[in-house]
Length: 132
Image (cartoon, rainbow, N blue to C red; front, side):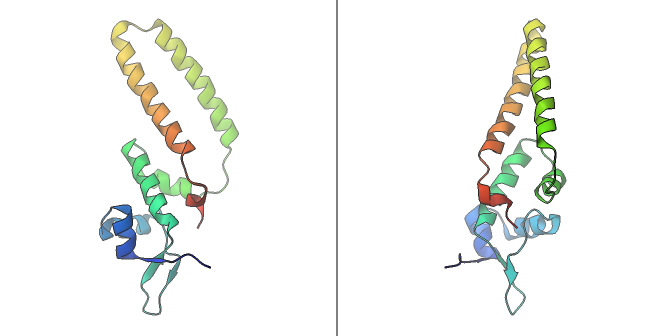
């Protein structure tokens, strides 16, 4: 049995956003209709609710919508190389924190917390959120 598709207003209500936000996210390529009705109304997949929530969490943490759209619509990426670079950067951040003046500790903690939050978001991405 196929999953029920959502009209734009239903998607907006389930995601807790306005219809205007759904339109904007569609324009940016953050979500896309699964199909259209005979009257040309857009119908969205249930997974788009999770996708909207993911976009909002990333945006709250400072990731621009355009970057999110590019990332969601790009299949090939050398994640291993990026993770290696992050590992080196985290080690450098730890070294900086070890020798930082007390007044810098708070700033470094804020930065480290932001990195941690983004990693947590990445680990919570539902597997079907990336499906077209």
